[in-house]
Length: 428
Image (cartoon, rainbow, N blue to C red; front, side):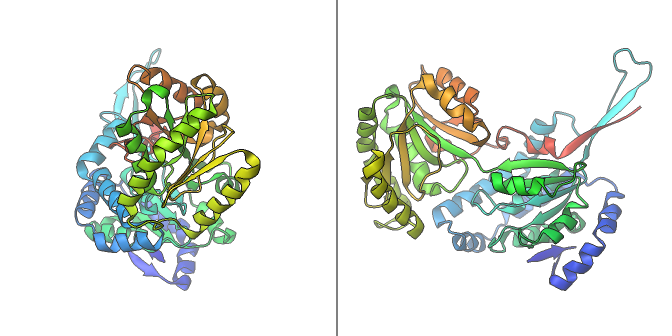
């Protein structure tokens, strides 16, 4: 589905738009900079009046169940309400970000005026994972005054176009700042035409997607990466508290381990496999209970592909020395190695040894892939263990229950996106 000037276009219409795209964006850039307050007001009205039934159905078609879908909607309402957006602008761009700053620099003889400007044109290459609607990336681009060109992922379901159409209906002046195209990622010719008008390309995806785009992006176009990340829980012996561990189980169950912030596996602060086995036996009933509350009857929520991977893991365990602990809806695999990896998903997590003295040495090689660590430990250990995780490359440490519930204004993967979508200009 393609969207230009607030209208749905067919393939022929898109071809005509691409031929005139350079002129179109130049005309928009020549106008006064888009006022952030217009975007804030429109987003606030948008999230207050979301059609929950439509978006739940659209997410269901993408494999996102109702519990996670409702969580997404609640987070969207919080993230894009007026209060949160104004907070983000001040937190990410600094107090007084909208006003020019005039000063005489050290050693200077004349005044200089600095102010923030949009980068100009952002091309958003959206990912097909479950970490939020591609439209959310466009909303951040609008908030910083940019023209936004969104290339949808395959099988997106139409939710992003619906959301952006509703936004344009609320604030029609945004129409010329929003373009959406559903070209295939293999359609290099059209993607290069989109990149040709960009000041920056915003990429949401894994290492392969980023590497492929690097080859297409010319040196004078900025590449802004928001890659796929891996998150995990870290449990110390002193942290074996049922309530905290239930929070880890809840994250696994509710998110289906589909998010970059979802628990893929659990590291135990030990060198002893017996402690890993003991943990699995104690944690499995908690996970089973969480899966039951999130997904209902036994077996529901275990996708066919995940079931096949679990069966393969059980066969491989004969040779690898790992042990698979199976419940009715979930499983834990006690592994002999200590490497970071993604999980089978849908309630199936790995459990590995990782004594705290080895955290940096073992995890630092994965630094560009690390995101959130759900830390389960005694209060007296928290600062010291968190520091080790941060030094290894983790960007967020929190209780397991909060891993996939970002606070208002939280950075993306350790960086503020609004800051990356702007530039500082000076007039002397």
